[in-house]
Structures are given as structure tokens and as C-alpha cells.
Length: 219
Image (cartoon, rainbow, N blue to C red; front, side):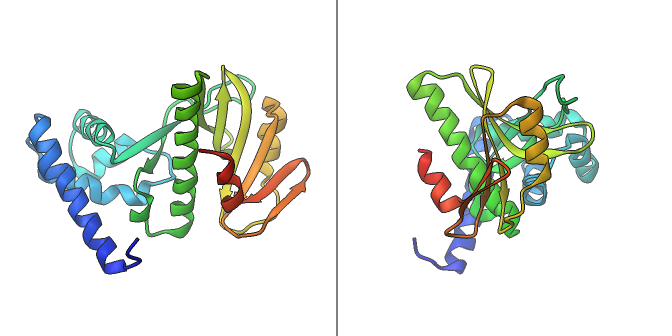
């Protein structure tokens, strides 16, 4: 609201310090506070990517069990959330690693990662609303197969495909992976959501739409 970069940076620093040194320290039985701080410094570069706990373990030179515990604690305190891959025999899907996103996406410097994170947050809020308020069994996944084809987000209701979303800054060319997965899984609605404004067109049965318009349809 202040529209001031220096204020935002100070706020980020204070927020992280309070989460780690006050809330986590007071509630969780964690002694390695400095190691959690080191972990937090690594995470912004992992946003929107597959999250490998083994890679983090190697970077921090600690045990897998410790990294898993710290990541679970940070998630419990709403520092980040994870979106898991959708599994299906139809697409030879990936079964393991989730993708990482922050609750506060303003902390992410890379524009493309920040935009994808923003879309992820809104979609997560939307499926929570459907589940908690309207009673639908809505779930949010991402799509990725063994051939490394990937689509950012996939929403399922009552185990049935509803819509998928690929987030891009400005591209108006249809993402080929959207076409592939929409055909394989018979996804009714397919969106390519772009940061660029005043876009709303159909190409090859895929709706390319500005985030400013797409997000108004959510909650």
C-alpha cells in the first residue's frame, strides 16, 4: 500500500525474522534456528520449480530428516505451500516431487516466477473456497509426465478434470503442452493466463486470457 521498495524490503526482513525467531522458536522444539534461516535464504530460487529435499540437504549439509522437518514447520507457519503432481496412467505422470510456492509472492525477485506464484496462490484460495464453503472436493495439482512435458496448474473436482492453467508473462502462442494434456485427459477448459493486459482470445480451443480478467472469475 505504501508503494515503497525500501519499506517492502524491511517488512520482508521483519516478517521472516518473526516467523523463525519468535513463532517457530516459541512453539516448535527446534534448536537449529540458524539452519532454518539458511534454508529460507535458499528457497526463493526454488519457487515454481520441482522441490528436491535431497538437493536442499546437500546444500545445507544436513540430514534428509532435518530438511523435511524444517520444510514441514515452515509450511505449517504459512511461509510456503507445495503443489503436488497429478497422477494418471493416461499420461505416465510424475509421482514424487512437488512444486514450491510462497504465500507472500512479493518476496520473489524473478518476474516470471513471481507471476506464476501469484496465479498459484489465487487458484489455491479458489479450491479451498470450493471445498470449505460449497462442499466440492476440489484439488489443485500440476501436470508433468516422464517426458518432462509440464503444465503449471490443474484443477480437479470430485476426481474429474475441470480446467488447467499455464501462466506466462506475455506469450500469445499456444503452449504445446496444454494441447497435449488437454487431449490426453479430456480437460473441459484450458487456459493460458498471461500478465499482459487486454488479452482474451481463443486459439486451437485454448483460451489465452489476461490475468487481470481471469482472476476476477475466482474468489
